[in-house]
Amino acid sequence: MNLTEFTSLQTLTHIFTESFTEPTLSKTNWTIAGSTCKNANPTMGQLYLNETASYSTKSVAITNNTLSISAINFPVALATCKSDFDIPNVSKNYSSTRIHSNTCYSHGVFSVRAKMPNGVYTWPAIWLQCFNCTDAETEYFEIDLIETYGPKLGYSGEMSAFYSEYTSSTHSENFIDESYDLIDAFHEYTVVWVAGYIGFYVDGVEIGSGFNYSGIEEAVMRFDNASACAVLNINLAIEGKARDGIAPNYTQLAGDQESWTPLEIKSVNIYQVI
Image (cartoon, rainbow, N blue to C red):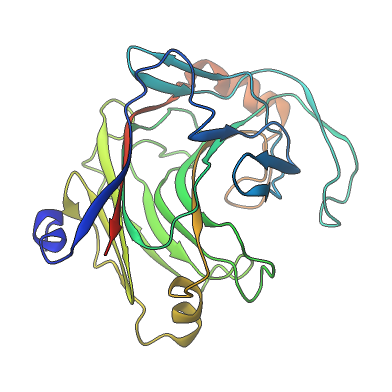
């Protein structure tokens, strides 16, 4: 079923739109992560990142109604935020960039028009992250509109839903066909999140078969929890822990840097399911 057919069966209200017409990012709508630890959110308090990459506010720009997010050669000390960071104040040679919405959403249709970055060691993602989870093992969930990584970056991507932060097997994966050019063209990445089902679409075409979790008790408890909500993250990580669990060294990053391009966003639209 394509996106138009699916959404025609829902009652939707358009509750948020962003087309980046202002010269700077709206502080009302978005927060730029300024560290790896807790980041102040003007409407919700603190968002805990718990990342092995180092985040800064120096590489977010808007040009020609396009948001540009980059990874840059900018040394930053990585502070110790939790016990799983085993080395305090690690020096990172590159800084990553991450923004997140200042509103937390429960169910809806989330659509982002984006062009993914080039580079073997960049790790970009556009994703929904449970904000008010207090226990990572029993409450955490995330929904990835698009995530790309690895040596085939730009020519394959993943759309997925996780309901455990530390158990990778408890999720739904949907891989985008390699015929899609993700780094040289803009595409509309959309997630439909309704009770019992999460659907993934690129340019209105369903990718895989979505994720019907109505019969999975643990997933129902997380994705359909009336009090749970998620913020929308847009980030480009570098020099963190890679997908295979091994961080690239400085020589690998320096050799790859010339190929890096920014993650570019044209628009964000969110619809509430009522």
